[in-house]
Length: 380
Image 1: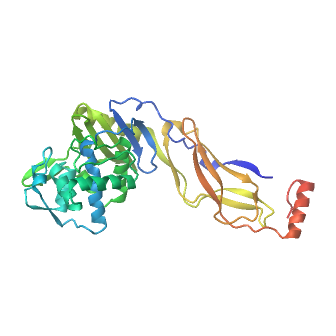
Image 2: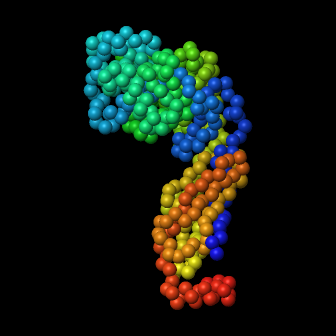
Image 3: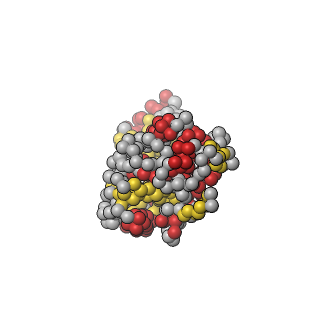
């Protein structure tokens, strides 16, 4: 006995393989890029996505993350006001135009950061959440590591040039996903197209908000050394994609290429649900058990992102060492669900016993063993 069983699962035959990439996005004018499906985490395309780059104002997303965390925890309210220091007021670059020695409502600061990209608003937030902007940078770097950003060092709250202020495109995409999933109650601010503060009206700099693409966030960025960048998200037909691109020479190039990459991701890929949580995927034989078989199931939903053109190449099988030796304990991990297709990395998910199966009594085990030796099968 103890043979490795590979049972093909016909119920899902005909679905496509995950990430069999059509030709397009292997070429982009972006210096750095990554495109991710928000539900499955599948990377549809990447280019130098782990290089540490100057993120410019895209790093304002970590400032917003820390502010949203304070709001979600009840340590701040949207109606609370925060003081404006002279340092915040004097900050150059894009501004919300806060008045020195005034107090600004938290909700206005959110809009000032998201829509107006206010460096002054970022410093107001940083000085309120920490003893100084330097201390805020240290705290933000620690928070970045805690939420899975592996190539991020934060030196300021605004993204103004600093040789040590660095992030990767993948980190910016991960941060964007965390903002969407961790704080859905605040995500709608990213889709607002304009905001007026201190009698100065400014429009959202995200070019995708003005296109018929389903875009609803997140943040542009630009400094001379890094070029033009964008952390974006769009939703169509129940799917959400997150895109980070950087290194463009102009705002027009950034807009065109970001739109193209998102359209490609929606057009060429789709998500396919293979199993719901607790679905039985097959039955396994049990050796010398009171029941001859036990159902095997997956604990979590399995949805994969697939290239539409590769829908016929999927293979799904259950692999386990069988027949399973009794006793079998319910919910014990007993094998692996294997999902593969051309041009994709094989996916593996654990499968579990759906019931407990006790071992036969001594006399029954002897009779079963004799039956197997004589007839080649267990007779009960």
